[in-house]
Image (cartoon, rainbow over the protein chains, first blue to last red):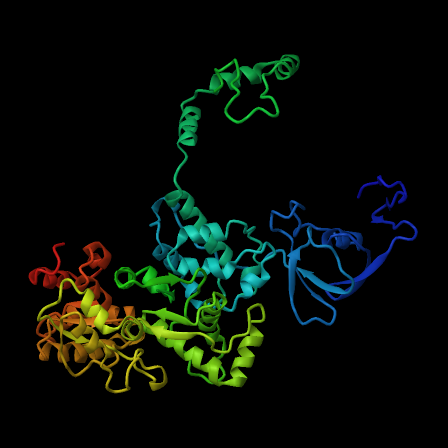
Length: 263
Length: 293
């Protein structure tokens, strides 16, 4: 927690092993696994839990909403609906009842991507439980990333791997879809297979990337890298400071460095 | 004319010959089948258990997708999709308690009360395009080809969703006449193909197929037309074994009815996807000079 505040009103709040609230700060009650805690409003679920004394050994990762380690299920007082979010992204609300689901068991098929047939059939063989889907849509409702999970599962059943790959692109593999599935599908693993097949067999390859990989593997840059690693700190600093740099607002494709040996 | 269209998963995978020939034929007849932009599996089998509403959710969701687009009709091709969608639709129209429960469960969707009409391709062809127009557009009549129309179960049972009068549907015969073929009456056009028994109890399914194909062979047919990928799987997959066991005297060339429609309309052979049919089917058309592939 930061000990500075731009507004200059809130003073130092964290000392020892637990944050101490500044005078007058507003707290709200939340229930973590059934137990009530008073936490400062405006915190994310993750920070609120840490404030309350929880320490994350698992169930926390990037803290930036992309690693999928902190899926959280919660309900609001007087509301039958289940809500889902990432603990690091979702702000606490008064009287929310929450629990983290950092891991949910889901079978992941073993395959050799180079030997796989790029078709729906290959996916059906590895994940026959696909056909247990009843289109209940609980998966989509559970997704904290707003992925249309049912739609990508449907696309796979229709043999449309490209569509499934595109629809599932935002998936962060948190597993909440699988936790809510009536048909016991491991949706996120199935989608990952679809994206891998898409990347390996369907998406057109980029020629320039292929050429660059060939150059790297062919040793074009080995000598340059060696030279860099042998340099002293001073030499490296000089090289860095004197490097040619593309002007910030140069229109794309108009600037070329004078030194072309690294291209 | 444009109409909303529900393909079904199998038409996108195993039965592309059913879908592609149908779409091309409708285009030739001036009808654009507009595939729903979002759709899921139809549920495949209609659940008969009174309290098993979850299995109606899939077809109802598809009907909601059609309603969202402002479609009053949804044309479909696969017999099983037709059956599942039409029966779920009847529940939503007629059973207030079940309708309420299903709509409550699907709270993220608009409420559905059966606003959309589920129409099988054959009925659409007869009622909206009309046999006369089909006859008029036929460029390559299937002169003299003796064809058995096979309905199986799901196009004609139960009576509430049957595409023709129960026990005596004539729509396939009318269709065959319109494209210049000779419809052949035979015992077995309404028999079950064995359906999913092919997995759990294959003997029973093969027996069922034997009765259907035996009836057709006995009536001296040249070919048989169907509308269902599961019927196709059972009929086509069991033929060789039945022939080897002497239970039928020859193979029966099988086509999706839309493939013969495409041939009769003079469409390019690529639109028919005969590459997905058994060899015997293509051989028949080639021997009659109807295709050249």
